[in-house]
Image (cartoon, rainbow, N blue to C red; front, top):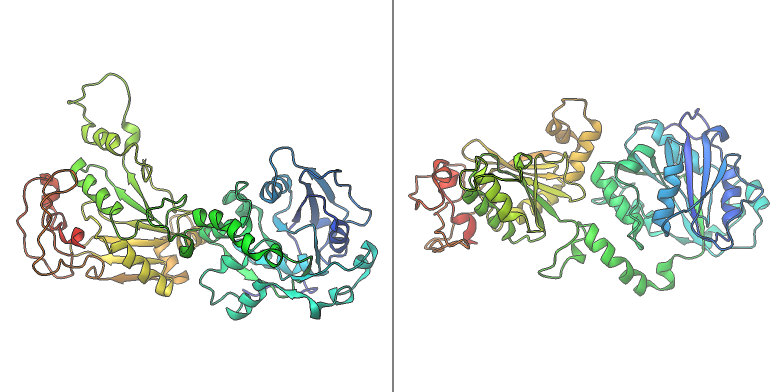
Length: 496
């Protein structure tokens, strides 16, 4: 993509600058800088969101023509204030800015120009930190460049700029959402609302958590070095780094599964799982589903949730024959799994598993090996593959889908277009043999005598690409499981 050159194009999309403020001692400087922007005034509105300031904020004389004061009626905090402003915004583009930032004259234009090229970007501006010098709003308004106002050589560079430089403008970044840490960012209003805005319950790291959900939605993060700004005052990390890091950890640990370094406590359950395991249980016996669920929850990768897709809405309460119920198997499964918080029962899988970063989909009668998910994720992460497809020997497939790749495909797809074809272009679709993901049982290893349900487990070899010899299995998990080649080969998937 090639955006238009600054000053050499005609903007057409409207921009709403949302500024959360609690007190806002430097708000007059921020608004003065916005009043001097090169972006057309008739396309620009500024919403100053007063987050419970005492005394209430009053707008200064030097400000953009279309500046509104929006009071927070319920709730508090930065996330809540930004959402309040975005909900009141009329612009096609939401520009987030803080009340203690002084943007350069071209700032809004630099970020907004990308959104005239396509509609699935999040643009990121540059910022440096300085101690606030004695300045007036008039001086800021008249200045042609930030260097006239601040000693930029002594400014503290943001870690964002260093990361952008090291990753070739984020082109080589594995997780570009990391640099989208608050102001200054711009994105389409529809995208802001599609991901649910900021999370008001996240009091530290709210910008990173929001950026992570944007990444799962499939956006492309684009930094613009010409969108410069100065932040008045040092960031909290410089003032008390140890406490700042500790304060943000629980919020990100629960909500950003890609932060594996924050999920090292064994046996924990987290708000957002790392992998959603989706199994279609329509017309499947309870015994087969029970075995599949047990295998899914007993893998080496514990940070998972299981979604069972079936016609659950057919089940009705009220008087019925318990044993003669035509939905006996379905109701039995519902009653069996209803109270396990790791298992969801839904009629139809969502288009993506967001905010979980990965989704596994495979035949319900091919239980996961203990190493399956761990190895699939490991291999997909090596080259950031969009979809890893394991070709099973009976012609079916198991697949690990990257949520951000699915999200991007949905943003790009025309109605009825094949998503895998799009993902093959944007992220890549890789087909692999099953041996590594369903490894054979070690020689001489005997299958366990009984499952947790008290039934004998069937013997199961790995679903290798070569045809497997028939294996005799005990008739204890139902004829339906026995009819499938893979359903006859159970134990190796559980042996490790």
